[in-house]
Amino acid sequence: MQMLNLRLWLLVLGALLLVAWFVYSWLQPVKAPAGAPSQGPIAVEALPATRGDVLETLSLPGEVEALRGVTLRAEVNGKVTRLIVAEGELVQRGQVLLELDARAARAETIRTRAEATLASTTLQRLRQAQAASAASPLELDEAVAREALARGAFQAALAAEDKLIIRAPFAGRSGLQQVVLGETVTAGQALVSIADDRALRVRFRVPERALAQVKAGQALTIQHAGQVLQTSLSTLDSLIEPSTRSRLAQVLITPEQAATVGLQAGQFTQVLLPVKLAEDAVQVPAMAILPGLEGPRLMVISATNPKLGQVAIATATPIKILARSSETVAVTGITAGQFVVIAGQQKLRGANPQVRLVTPTAIPFIGTQPETMP
Image (cartoon, rainbow, N blue to C red; front, side, top):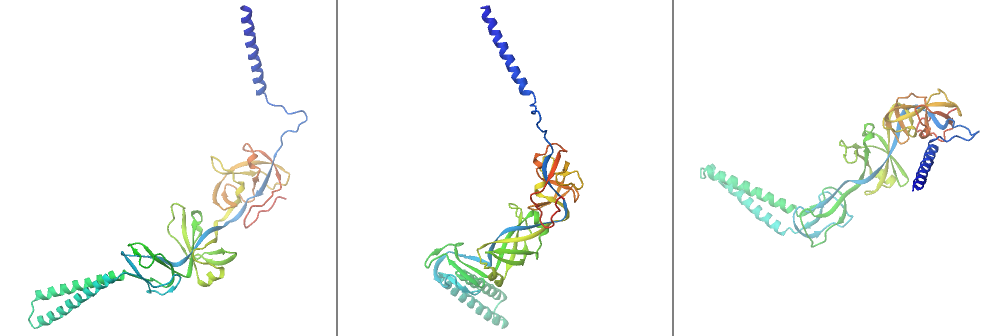
């Protein structure tokens, strides 16, 4: 029994020693093989910061609309008795497009017109009688009131009849009819649309970040079906849409301009709007910016005029972003001419790592391009 306990304790002790050896081995740093080169400076690409205007051309989707267009709706209930204008027909302002059943309304108009005529005649006779002292002032006052009531009832009957006759509010082209002959419609139901497509407008939205640089009269370009139209901004809405953080903008298009690029109401097009996001500011490529919990920063090369292959120190420098385009960023915190790392900065560790400069593969600047390293 004692021998068995002794063997058991020896096995447990041996297992503990083996585990301790494995843990010790795992915690020890791995030594590089003899003759292996140590890790040197990290290869990075760098370009100098420049000074100038930060420009960007916004490419914004636009919708072509008729300058004036409306869907006419029934104001009262009624039956469609006449469809006068064909679909797609050019109409003039005030032209009758369709009619609802107006027989009862016309009868009411005739009745009230007769009552108004009678009241007017009675009033004239009473005035003549009063002049001859044959009518009292009370009788005259009552006649004046009856004449005014009759005249008002006649005007109301005319208005009610007019609601049954649908006229074009302006000159344009009739759209698709949304009712058929004999159909009974209700108040608010769509009847027919009309649009003045001789003049068009292109509407688009300008993002909030560019609003300070956009004004009415500013030059812009409309691209449509491979054609280009140079024009200007007509109107910019005064309110920002909360859901999109943008403002509605509008460009008026003349018939001649529309024919030049083939614009028609209902089409979508592309608006190119150049804006100046920052003026005379230090700018760097957007790819050089490193985000962080404490704010954005740049890896700035310590050497004044670094050469290719030179080993230098890269310093993590906090910056403040003034404006951002799709490819360049205006910043404060560095000066023009300082070289910033544009590729390879994700591999850098610590505040002042050693780097070796290699040739940049691209120069991602718009407008004034920075000089490459000698």
